[in-house]
Length: 203
Length: 141
Image (cartoon, rainbow over all chains, first blue to last red; front, side):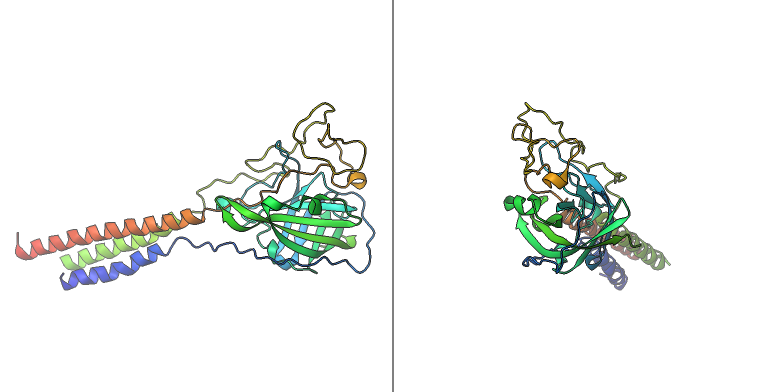
C-alpha cells in the first residue's frame, strides 16, 4: 500500500467508526420498584363534587399533561391512551372523578413505541409523600399525596386493590414497567394516592 | 495533481457515508403519528363507547363490584351514566392495562450496524479502485 493509500484509509476510518456510533442511542427502561407501605394523610379532606379531570400534574417526575377519557374495550379490558408522539394520560370514566370518594383511575403509557417515552415514563420514581394535582373541569384542583408505589406482574394484577371500594377519595396512576417480554412489558407500575387538599386551579 | 483530486474524492465519499449512516439508525419520522384527539383511543383499542346494557346478555364484560342493585351478573355492562358515588367503580375492567407500547430498541441498533457495514464496504471498494488506478498510472499500463 502506497503512502497516499494509507493516508486515504486513515482519513476514512474515523468516518466509518463515527457512522457506526449513530444508532442504538435509546437507553433501556429502568422503572425500578419503590414499594412502600400505605400512608394515611393526617386529616381527612372533604370530598369534591363530581367533575371530570382535564389535566394532571406531577411535579416530582415532570408530568403536566391533559387528561382524556377512557372506557372499556370490547374485550372487557380498559382502554389506554393513543400511542402518539405527544401522548397524554387518560381517566377511566367508569371510576370516580378525582376528589370523589372511591378510586379514581388514571392511565398513561411508559413508552409509546417508535415515538419514545410515554407520559408516565418515570412513574416508578414516585415516592410516598410526592404530590399529584388533578385539574378538574369545574375549575377546582384535587391535590393528592402518594401513599404507595407498587410494581406488580401483569399476571397478578391487583384488581381489588386498584378498583375496589375505599372509604375516601383516592387516586390510582397506572402504567407498564419491568422487563420487556417481546413487545410488551411484564409488569404494571401502580401509584396509589389519597386526597390531601382541594382548592382552586393553579396556573 | 491526480493524487490531490483522488484524495479529495475519497474524503468527500467518507464524509457522505458518515452523514448517511446515522440517518439510517435514528430516523424519527419512520412511523407516522396520528393526531391525538380528546377522546379517541389508540390503535389496537376499541372505541370508548361502553357496551350497551342488556338484561339478557351474557357477554363477557367485566364483573361489577358495585353494591348497588342495578348492575348484576347477567348485565355486567356499565350503565350509560355511571354513578361512582354510589358504586365507586361501576365497571371493573378485565386483566391488566397494556400501557407500554415497546419501542424499536433492537431495530435502531440494527439499522446503525447496517449503515456502518454498508459504508465500510463502499469505502473499501473505492479504495481498491483508487489503488489499482494509481498503480496503473505509475506503471503506464
